[in-house]
Amino acid sequence: MTDKTEKKPTGGIGRRAFLKRGVSAAALAGIVPVYDIFMPNVARAAIKPEKEDLKFGFIKLTDMAPIAIAKELGFFEDEGLYVSVEAQANWKVLLDRVITGELDGAHMLGPQPLGATIGFGTKAHIITPFSMDLNGNGITVAKSVWAEMAKHIPKGPDGKLVHPIKADALKPVVDAYKRDGKPFNMGMVFPLSTHNYYLRYWLAAAGINPGFYSKTDISGQIMADVLLSVTPPPQMPATLEAGTIMGYCVGEPWNQQAVFKGIGVPVITDTEIWKNNPEKVFGFTADFQQKNPGTVLAATKALIRAGQWLDENNNANRLKAVDILAKPQYVGADAKVIANSMTGTFEYEKGDKRSVPDFNVFFRYFATYPYYSDATWFLTQMRRWGQIPEGKPDSWYVETAKKVYRPDIYLEAAKALVAEGKAKKADFPWDSDGYHPPGDDFIDKVAYDGRKPNDYLNKLAIGLKGDQHVSGSKVVAN
Image (cartoon, rainbow, N blue to C red):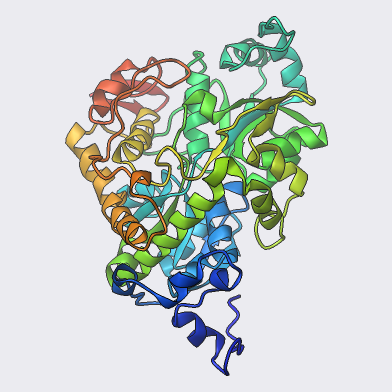
């Protein structure tokens, strides 16, 4: 809960009034320079929040870090925002509470605002002015599955298994389950999640069909070789240990938790599936943004600063961030588990800890800019697996991406930060049209151009394309 008690830090002035005069908690702690307290500039003064008292939601994952840092270091308060944060039970509850207004905004899955806006599941127009991070997920399998997979993975000169590990090594295991008439179950966190799409991408690249959705069957398991189902992130290790699932795709610290508990082996990180892939976003309803544009700008400024802090000086602040995230009101996991990935390493099989400096990226590589091409990629995967049941023209992808992802708001916040001396001009992609250059930084080397989504879909061996749709248990063309 937000502390609404009026404390008197100086001269009898209440805490909130004191902060509104420009003296933030961060300034008092020496995090921002004294001149910034007494010399507020025009850009800052121009952004006035319409709503100051806010409640933001999140799921207990390390990539909620920008929210925790913006709160703990006083970046929200610097912008005149008094924010309480609250962990949510799962992604559906989180989205529903943003839609009803119980939450003013929230940490969201990258595809979640898109899915809501086009009406897959709960329909509501959600926008995002801020991308929270790149990378941060992994795929973990049960130790029994790993024992079989390892037989099909070559070793390097150092005796270690060669990474990245493709799902080709999993295919013989899946085939054996099919021959024995047993289902091969895996978990992901939500149908409209990066985890769902990255897990599906990894499987399909090896010729393993992860299943389709249709208008009448939203299980996502039509024609599936591997049955994917939803499991909330904190429950992943226990569900794996119980044998309900044989593997999962999730964010941290829940892959590393499987290593610490000795119940599973992370086999690949998502940055090995798609280098520097987009991950979470911060979402508001479009209605909230229209009524409170200054509030959204102020929150975006604070979150940008948090991302900067998390990555600055070659991740020098990460251990401090780990201590903050370990608090029960945030992630609430053992600091050692969180540090295993947050500090630039990742442990695969027990004892096989490797350097992965970009496992979590919160600011560099323009990580916080909400690219249209990222939104379009998520939409292509929704179409690929039948969540978008019918073919759409390229123009539809452009229009939908621009309706949800809002780099215009982001850049307005960035301009204010540069004017205030809190960020460098070079830190932001001012000349971007919202699209990354075409590239093939995927595990299967299939090239992606966000301007040509249908061309991209046509290149993928497994998945819907053109006028195809799912009818019953078959893929058919109109």
